[in-house]
Length: 102
Image (cartoon, rainbow, N blue to C red; front, side, top):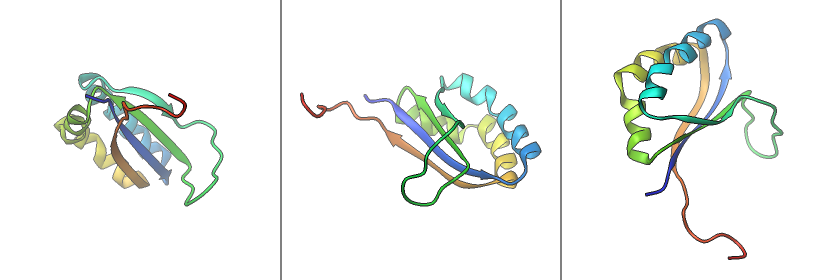
């Protein structure tokens, strides 16, 4: 079973309120074995709508990624994010197939 990823792209309107979201997600992310691959950082926008904050979080599988999102711990924190930012959040399955050149 392939790993799964949350891909979040956000524009933060209220950094103080967003900080409450970040603090509130710690319990859910620990419980569901989240691993941050990208957490903000510098980026170069090549196509499409740019967002100021980009995050990629790895989970053991899509079932776990969705369970984290639906958990009471995450849903409580999500209210702060909704009040403080605009953006998109996707859950995407990883790919375990052949790679170019293989």
